[in-house]
Image (cartoon, rainbow, N blue to C red):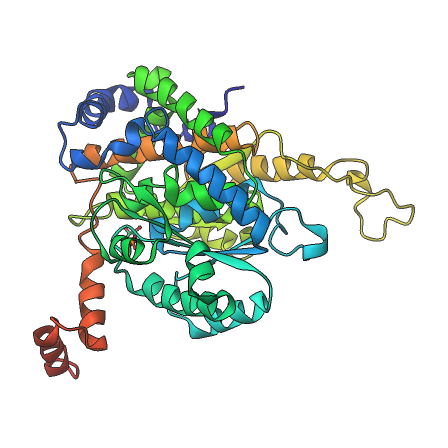
Amino acid sequence: MTAVSFNNVGLKKYVKPSELKEIEPMIDTAESELMNGTGVGSEMRQWLDLPKNYDRKEFEAIKQAAKKIRSDSKILVVIGIGGSYLGARMAIDFLHDSFFNYMPDSRRKDPQVIFAGNSLSASYVHSLIDMIGDRDFSVNVVSKSGTTTEPTIAFRIFRKLLVKKYGAKEAADRIYVSTDAKHGALRQEVKAKGYHSYVIPDGIGGRYSVLCPVGLLPIAVSGVDIDKLMGGAAQAESDLTSHKKIADNDALKYAAYRNILYRKGYTNEIFESYEPNMRYLAEWWKQLAGETEGKDNKGIYPTSACLSTDLHSLGQYIQQGMRNLMETVVKVENAPYNETVPSEKSNLDELGYLQGHTMNFANKKALQAVVIAHTNGGVPDMIVDIKDQTPFTLGYLIYYFEFAIAVSGYLNGINPFNQPGVEDYKNNMFALLGKPGYENLRKEIEAHKND
Ligand SMILES: O=P(O)(O)OC[C@H]1O[C@](O)(CO)[C@@H](O)[C@@H]1O
């Protein structure tokens, strides 16, 4: 099987072949807007040929930095929010054991990679400082703008901790910055303090940035072979950008089906997997889809569930609640590990029928049973089959979703690469926090606070 493929078995009842044929010219147009750069926001498409056209020198520098961090740190604290952390978090979870970060130092060969600066919770920061204790650590701060509130606060705190522990000079040698090439506060700090630094290319926005230094450094520090990750993405680039017809292009199939369903009123897409270490794959996908498509009063609402866990909380709603749901299920063909259900004579738990079978067997049957139940119950199912959980397959999968979601954006007539709506809350927050320049907005908010 190929690394990633699309399966429409759960769609037969919901989409007629003629509907796929009818959307094909629209998909063609959206795909050519993306590929030829004729669509709005085209300057933000640098991720499109990134797997083949990246800065090789910087890539080597990232590997060297990862080597240094692995040798002098027990913990890497990665500071960033949104696209500046979700890709790395998703990849590290997907490619490592569920308890990767929980192993004690005595049993681990890789540093712990812990994320910070993705909330304003003081309790979280306090607990992280406590968890680091007197162990050696380094910091990778990731922010394209360099001014996002959450990571900026966290960076101040962890930089202070580094300076206190190591002194200013060694602290600077333990700070790794991924930011804009020229602009922004962080770039100025790099110049002033001499931190290690890497460039987030101009034409790559946060949610499309996992395969640039944003994701690559933390992923490499965790011990993943980033050449293989890029190799998978490069394969996807070859496969998906050279086959322009839906029939030969599984990312276009996904874009086409989810948009046919959206136009029929299936406005919420639940992203599902059956592996707990793919929870963050869903979180990454939610930002990718939500920030790309949710604008101009349009867009599929992206949400997620981890199964079979959430069948015991959300399963009832999915089966019988409002019929505006569709599902995208990531199905792993070869999970990295397996366990067998032990045999027991007594059979008090009535599990005898399963003894000797594997848990992966049971997991696959659960998936099959759910697809049948949900499609019968009014929820169309799109299945994305993935071969395994290797860096190559993940690289392929990342590109697959980025490509499909960007095409979906153009199909819906929006700019897939901006996120103007995020500014509204930020401006209000700056006004309420007293940031200079926001005085008038603060007055306005205060005048209306009892409305
Ligand atoms: O890298 P930055 O500039 O800190 O931005 C982080 C995230 O914030 C957003 O701009 C939205 O607030 C995302 O698009 C981005 O991924």
